[in-house]
Length: 321
Length: 282
Image (cartoon, rainbow over all chains, first blue to last red; front, side, top):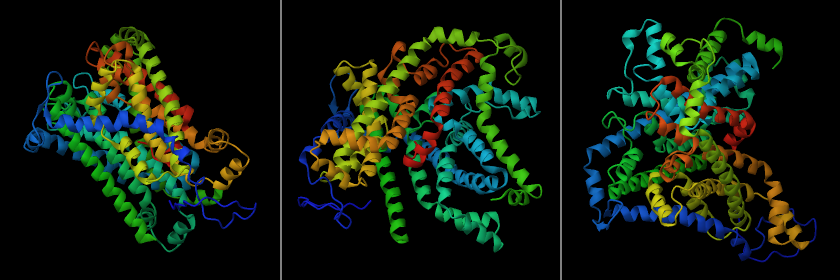
């Protein structure tokens, strides 16, 4: 967004002379800055101070009650050698794959399919019904989606195993969330299901920017659907792709509710993620300093990921300009 | 595209195969909800006899009634409405104030300020949860829904400030200068000019903040431990596996959490799809 900063007082202008004038704020009203005070105070109390406290905790050994013992960076060095943490980190990467990468790719293909293939042949109504169906899980609380899938995947009386038996695939019945070998993949599959609607809706909104004559011309020249998808749709959707990847990656780092309701990190630590691991340290083993160190590391990672994605996006725009 | 053109494009079996493919995806997406709905109105004996996939032989709300009374679900519903409603309104007010200063007032270093605000929204909640728990205890707001209202007002306003500031930075300043020349004060300009012009964006923000807050789990779970203060998501998730031994009651409890979300979805569908395009939903 272009912003010009003018510190000179605005000259009194005759009506009608504004056309070529540079944009400026209402002069520079220090009193307008006063409107920032309530927001800033609240922000400091709820975000900045707690952030600082969390870093402070992470430099101590503390069990939530009693005195805090300064340990410097020991929590961090311990974290670096903690196999459970690294495992949880790997699972987090799996969740980024399942909640950001896969939904973005599938969402883009489905959006293009719905937008120009289904839309062009079966009309806008069919398109919007299908889009709404795919979007539904996105409006639901993540915790409730976890409960619903936990219910479907229940090993004894769950509906999925019942379904497998009914269609003659009884041999495939499985304790999907209870087996350490399948638990993470099962969670990932559920997360793809949860996330897919978000990229779909963003991409379908973005596709309205595409000039239909582009596709028509390419079609006349004999380009097939996939060719047009890769040559026209994918490049034009690049800005949306960055936004979607950023938002879904950050979403993947906030998957606590799903892990809590589906597996509580188990069996063993096979689906543990850093957010759950830090929660367990805070409130189950009350190793507050250690939990705070995990949280601090995740904060740094979140900020780095955000900056990298934003940088990629803006560099891309510069190249295009 | 004209009707004959549409017809011509539908030639051959391929379009129908694609349509069937999409329909299958739609069934996969909606199926779990249908299964939950179906089983929530089954009686225990019906479930025991026919399993989870058969249609209910009769509609039985027993599971709903039992769950509602054991958990005190009415309380949870009231709490969620109260929390989400207050947060939506308060966060919009805070966002409007912030954006007025940043977007129109153009205070110095506004890009930095915006960046820091956005950070508040992106931050992993585990980095805030223990200090917030500690602070809430110290100021006597632990296990009080006011603590959750304050926390989410700030978190949602962090996003709202970012969104609204970029909207307001394109605000035609001539309008504001004209109002100033007419002697309007800053307060009047805010409520009489800026807010009315931003009404569509504010509508989207109210909706998003309400739903986002409704869907929150981690911080409400930690700050509101006692069952009479819990929100819908927390009460459903934490009662799971406690007195929830039978599967039809689990379905009923999930259904109780799904119904409000469906209602919001239908109520706000247009705002939501617009909002997704405006600000990108989490």
